[in-house]
Amino acid sequence: MMAQANGHAQTQGHEHGHDGHHDQEELRQFGFWIFLITDVILFGTLFATFIVLRGNTAGGPGPELFELGGIIASTFILLTSSFTSGLAVLAMNRGNKQGLIGWLIVTALLGLSFIYLEVTEFTKLVHEGANMGTSAFWSAFYTLVGTHGLHVSVGLVWMTALIIQLARRGITPVTKRKVNIVSLYWHFLDVVWIFVFTIVYLMGVM
Amino acid sequence: MAQGTQNTHGSHGHGHGEGGHHSEGAHAHGSLKQYAIGFVLSIILTIIPLMVVLNDLLEGAAAIAVLLIAAVLQFAVQLLFFMHLREEQKPRYNLMTLIFGLVILVTIVGGSMWIMAYNGVVN
Image (cartoon, rainbow over all chains, first blue to last red; front, side):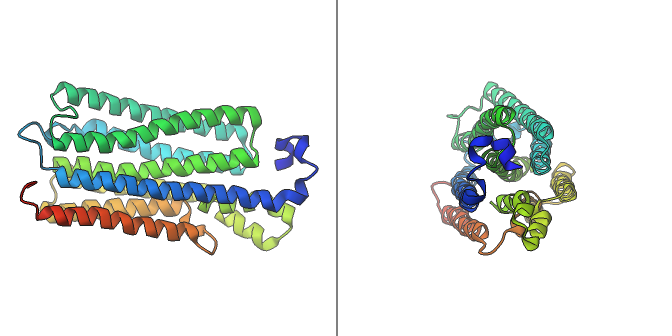
């Protein structure tokens, strides 16, 4: 199954180098997991900053500018995309290349609509007089939410590149590992968003 | 890697001819059912805090408690049903690094809140 996708070059040494390769791919995935844990700490510091500064609006606008409608939509969009990235992994495990690429495209499109909604929201906030320099509250807000949005954008570029690679090379041990990693990253971004949604928006409008 | 472990085992399963590995891999693959359960639970855990906030069902500390519990539960759901943390094989390095990261996270967030709660300049 792997050999077929891999081409003839590797068929020969296949049985032999099998376990070594296998361990290495697992190790790479573990390395990515460690990166995610450090990202947890990065977001932790941004959350800590936001929580500490949440009352410091310097007499200017505060969380009353939040409009939950768009935020609720983004939340369900991102949640659904986390699910569809899981469906992509399931399709991959069945060896279904078309399904895999299809679900990745759905995931990327959902991610794109999430970013679109976020950019719209930020533009609107700036027009209403809440830019990054308005107060400590808004600096902390844009840094935290913007860092998450940046992560999603990076994920989109990465997913697009991976879709192209999958279309060219098919499901190989290497692309398999990459799909696993990108879907892990995507689930992670959804988890971070749950806390952004709860702590920044829901508690903000309470 | 929680995912990776199983996937690699799954795809190599019959090549190895090890029954044990294979069944473990097949189980750990994460089924459609598992993802669907995780998805539904996540939606429920998003709707509960939304209802609390939009309808002003609770106030103050009680509302914050419900919101945080729902968020933490949803985090757990994603870890177990989407990221397959439960199916990791021993030694559970993924779980260990996660716990280490969470300890630092709680220290940073809790410590900052604690220190700044007594800061007269900021408040």
